[in-house]
Image (cartoon, rainbow over all chains, first blue to last red; front, top):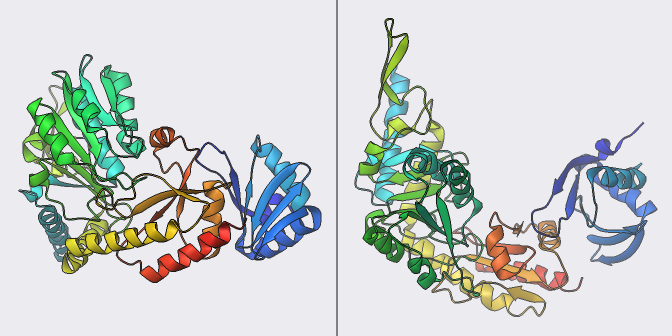
Length: 89
Length: 355
């Protein structure tokens, strides 16, 4: 049974007042992770195919094809894990 | 006494001599190898500050400092009860010299100032502040993390009592840094850490049930334990490489790149530059924001194109409060960067503006 940790290498809170959270996907799983996210989240906008502006259940985030995603307005790690579980699994 | 260990010691001490000459220190004993600029400042805070700063004393620092030139002092001020005074920064990011100098008093024991801001690239006239500090019988600590790699440094001309810098910002490895300190202070200061190498003798007295310790001479008194020998030698090689190029050349190249980048970034309508744009006032660091995007978005976007910039507070939150910024993106240059790379960076910035 896959888990969020199968896809995620690291979760980093950013410094700065924005309190963004950056999710770094595992290199060998990034394409699969992005494909899963694309199936579940709504694509709002894309730039040159490398940035995907997406939303899922009132949460907006950007996915970068380099294998990173930036989430905003997430209150806790638990909340982020729930969202990632819904998106990835 | 093994041949290889003697060779290693010889190379380590030769590295110290080269680095001393690089910054024009009077004596190689004034060079202490540490892990980083941060550790160098902590060494001064704990070895000198903890023993010399008392309730009623004052320490001066500016609002443009990296956290590593704020936090160690704040920590020991909680222990000793001395006062830290923060000098203002002008809205354009330059130091408010009048405010800094007016804050000196007979209570001031030390002034701590970055030579170059790691956020704005602003070059501070540390020689001027050192002169005022010495007129008040205060010491001067210079955070040289962003200046030593980028310009010729002469500690005797600056008349800094302490200068801290890191290896990894000047083509050396991580985990090696330097504290320069005038020998007269090092002789009086107690060690930062205890262990091997920093002592001459540890003799156990059975009658007293204790060990009597006699400390080594500077700089070894401040280098407890096995030092980062490889790091020091590698830093010395980096210094040799920079010397071969010439620090004037390094500075000139960065100045050219910074001028060019500023001019080109000003073509981008959604890009706002922070701090001064006159390269006579600054080094090769350009903080900026892109309208409607967080600095982290900008950094991730650039990363997609293989362009490395930094985002966030850059460990200098108070300066971001001065600039009224939630965070900033920061482009910075060194000797290996080219005009063509800046052109590519501008192309990427123009793509970001489409977001």
